[in-house]
Image (cartoon, rainbow, N blue to C red; front, side, top):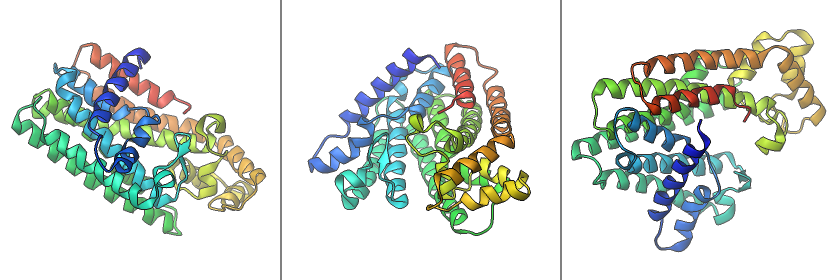
Length: 326
């Protein structure tokens, strides 16, 4: 990714977002702005804007859609943190820890409502495009809810899900907003259905790759960067793809070492570290990055017919996602 370019885009998106999150009661709007003001990659709005540019549209056309997607993303974070009882995000207390659970829930609801207010009230695109934006984002929100329940069901089940089951879950829970981001960028450019489909394919495969690499970082990531303990996902019993592959590949003492630490909140740091070492020795990192590369190759092919600077930015983003250590 071109850092200066992405920083400029993030700054522009933040300015628009914060301008739309002002009102009374002040605590409600402070809570809604809170996570936005404390970081985040702005990856999804970046995808909206670059997808629009790829198809000949302008950033101005796509700003409302980009802001709406980021609001929905933050809405999911606020509610996820409440459901998961998480206390820290972006290195600061979560919204419900800072403002209380009732205001936390309502601030998420406000973000959800404001997202649709923005794209329905936009004067940057024709009315038929605005309706398509609403439909696309609504469908993504439904997918996210379905994916969240699938994730909860997997966590509560005693059985280990298959790889296809896990991919289906992350397609809905994570990838669906990537699909929406790219499709909404294409729609904002007021282009053809074929262009929208191609960008949706790009977003779907980028989203899957993003999540499985994120899962890898949840196990082997540097705690100084991730702000989470070593092997945090192992201790929490998160049935992520790297852990599923490790349990499948491990035998004898290796499997016992993993399962002893897996889902055991009170397990010692030593046991978790040993489980991480076993997983690393099984070549899981290489396997996950290979799977991510497969999806990224599919994403690259989906935009191969286009040739402008935005395509280079989107290709650069693919490489960043599969190679990143955080």
